[in-house]
Image: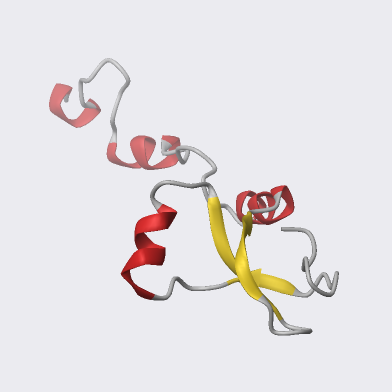
Length: 87
């Protein structure tokens, strides 16, 4: 969500689910509960793209890590043979 639908403030954040029904509802919709710091409004809305981008820039959901340095440290070769086993 970009702004509060009641007061148009941009000071909103995701809110926790309250009760079994809200947890159940989250499984069937792409909306999430939000709360406004300015007026106290609480309701359901779509997550903003900005919120998702912050997660990606923080290293969340960024794909697989590069483990090349670890492979080299233990002597692992891509063909599956170990350098230590062949010596």
